[in-house]
Image (cartoon, rainbow, N blue to C red; front, top):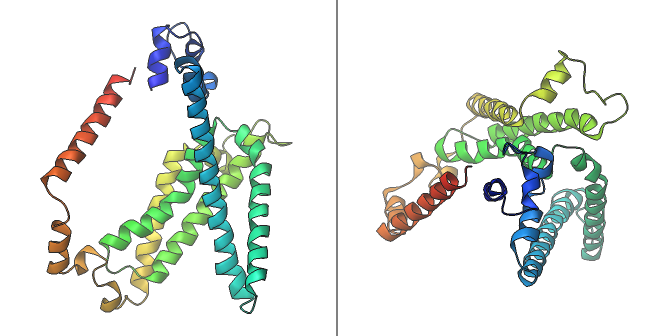
Length: 271
């Protein structure tokens, strides 16, 4: 929003390429909003600091992702398959898993390049995979009848729906042979491919909620001892008092100020 507002002023030549003569956004050029801001607004020294910080944050994020992925595969899958594996063997398997993840990431670059932009692609992937996770956490707090089987069923069904959407979108995004023009108009795959990703996210969320609630009520309820203090319905008076004592008016005021600043920034830079 900041880049768009500055581009419409016409005071920054590089940013002006984001909009046409009428001030409307050019989608292809708008994908480079952040690098255009860095090269147009910041001085040379500050520009280097921003790029260095961006690269450091990227390396840190990738290191965390690769470490979590290798640990998940090594400890939760491989060790259960080979419980007598030595520590040296587990370390070696973790390195192989990390290298495999890096290779998969490199091979997936053409898919990202064929999408409508990095930001929208990331939002789409998160929109396809996050709804079942949100469903489990949200209903797990507010629904004391939820059990492990219901949560697992919601996660599996939601994940399958998300992966299915990614499998449908990928051939079209990459422009693979036979998919240059997309799917046949009116077909089931064409409908799935053309549903706006946020609407599809709502669909996954709704299905995950139905599955979790249905499976939870069709199976045995969790014991009261295991969910004591974990849901709103099972929180004791002592726990409520301890939670209330952890914040005061200053925290409420600070939160209100932050929300007000966000709202003001949105209203100012909405164009």
